[in-house]
Length: 286
Image (cartoon, rainbow, N blue to C red; front, side):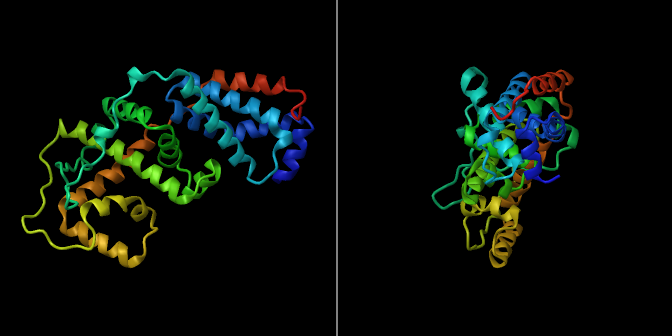
C-alpha cells in the first residue's frame, strides 16, 4: 500500500493501519528518542507524545515529506521538549574543553594519542560507554540530535537534512563538531589508561593544508564528498603526519563506538501502552 492510501485509511480511523505503522516504526522512533534523551522512561513518553501529535495533526499533513520523515521530526521535537523540561545540569560535563586545540601555525597544541587499536572490550567497556553517554548528554541540542541520527541510528545525511529541515552543510557542521567533542572525551579517558602520544616528525613536510584545516575536512573526507584531488592531498598529508593519521583513526572509531550505544530492545510495557493508546483513538483526524 502506498503512502496516499495509508493516509486515507488513517484519516478514516482504520485501526489496522495504525497498528501497521506502530509495528513498522516504533523501534526506530524509540531508539531515536532514547538517543536524544538518554533515558528510557523519557523516551517512552516522547514517543507517546509524538503519536498523540500525529493523531491530532494528521489532517494537516500535506505530504511535502514522507510520513516516516514527518514522524521522525515530531519525535525529535517531543524528545527535545523532554530535555528542556528537566535540564539536570549537574549530570553534564564541560564539552568545550574536549575540542582540539591548535597553534597559530595550525599544528596540534596538545598530544594526540591513537587509542583506536585498543581491544574492543576496552573500547566498549561500561565505564567508557558511560563517559560517552555523559558527553552526548552534554552536547548542545542541535549537535546531539544530528549525532544520534547519523552515528547511532545510521540515518543518511540527506535523511537528516529532510527531517530537520536543514541544509546539508549545516548538518555536516553540527555532526563534525559533535564528533570532535566525543572524540576528545574518549581521548582523555584512554590517555589515562594507555601508552604514549603520537609525535610529529622532526622535519615537517610542507602540505597544502595545515593540521587544523585537515581536521575541519574530516567529515567531508569520510563521507566521500571531497574532490578526488583534494582527497589524495589529505591522504598524502596523513601518511606523512602521524598525529593526523592518529586523529583520523580515533575520529572514525568514535563514530563506530556510538553505534554500540543503540538500545537493542523496546520495553514491552511501552508496546502495550502505545497499542492501548492507538485503540482508544477512535477519530484520528479530529
